[in-house]
Image (cartoon, rainbow, N blue to C red; front, side):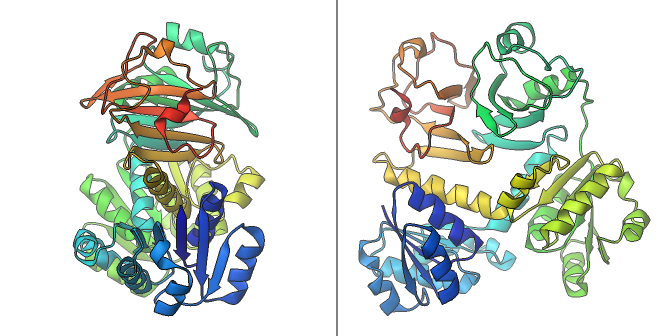
Length: 451
C-alpha cells in the first residue's frame, strides 16, 4: 500500500513506525525539518518538508497514486482541508484526525459532504475506553468485541487464589467451561497457553467471555460484584469533555478538578449536573478536601504523565477502588514496570490501532473484513475480530479438521448476534465473525490463520 501521512506528532510518528514495519510504502509530510529528519533517521520511509494543504507538496508526494492518505497534524482544519484536497487529487481513501468537541456532532455530515472517508477523534476514543473499563472495576484493562457482547479482561493472578498453581484444562473442567484464558504475560514473556499451562502468582492473564460469565469469574476470585457509581476526574481537557458526558448518561456522580479557570468554567457551563472545581489536582490537601476517598474511581487526565502516575498511586494508597491513568509516553513506563498502576489509557495508541485496523482491511481484497483489532501485552499479541467472506477456506469445515497455526487461538464465534464458545465439532459459516488471538504479526486476512 502507498500511504501518505501528514503530520509527525505523536500519532504520526507511531503510524510511520507501525505501517512501515507492516511493509507499506510510506511518505511523511512535515513542516518542522528537525522532527522530519529525526523520524526519517529511525524509519524506512520517504519524507517531504512542507504543509499538507500545499497542492504542490501533495503532487510531489505523488498523491494521485496514494492508496491511503492520513492527516494527523495538530490542526483539525489542516487535517480536514488536506484530506479534501487529497481526495480531489486522486487519493483512494482519506483519514483525518479531528479533535475539537465542537466538530464531534458534525462528523457524519462532514465525512459525507466533504468526501473524507474516515474521521477519528483520539480524545473521544480514549473516553470510550475509560467508560468501558469502569464497567469492570476489578479488571486491569478491558477490550470489547461484537458490540460489547464479548469482552477480554486483564486480571492479575494473586497469591492464595485458586488461579495460583492452576492447570488451565482444570480451569475449564472444574470452574468455567465458557471462559477462555487466551493470553498469559509472565514478566517480559507472553504465551498463548495450552491446556497444560500452569498459572503462577504475578501472571497477568487475559480472559474472554460474556459480561455475565466474567461477573461470575470475579466472584469466584473473592471480588464483590461492585458497580462504579462516583468518579473523580483530575484534568479538564478534551478527553474529560467526552468522558463527563458519557458518565452522566450512565447516571454516575462526576466531579472534575481543573487548574485552568477558563477550562473549568467551560466544563461547568456545559455539564450542569457535574461538579467542577477550579484548583490544583496534584495538591493532596485539595484532594482530601474534595473527599477523594469517597469516590469509587479516580481518573488522572492531566497533560503531564508523571503527575498522572503520582495521582493514581496516591488514589490507590487512599483506598480508591479503581484508578485509570493517562500516559502518552507508554514505552518509557513499560520499561520502568510500574505495576502499581491499574488501568492505563494511551490516546495515541488507541488511534494508531484504529487506523492500522482500517489499513489492513483495505489491503485485504475482501475489504471490510476486520471488525475490531487490539494490540495488547506490549504489542506482542493481537486480538482481531474477523468477518468471514463467502469464499473463506475456513467455511463448512469442523474446527478440529482445520490446520490452524499453533500461535493462533479462536476464542469465540458470533453468529446472528449469538455467542458460540467454539468446540472441535463446530463449523464456521459465511458472515460469521470470529475472535482470534495470535502472536503472529500483521495479520490482515482470516485465511492466514491456516498453516
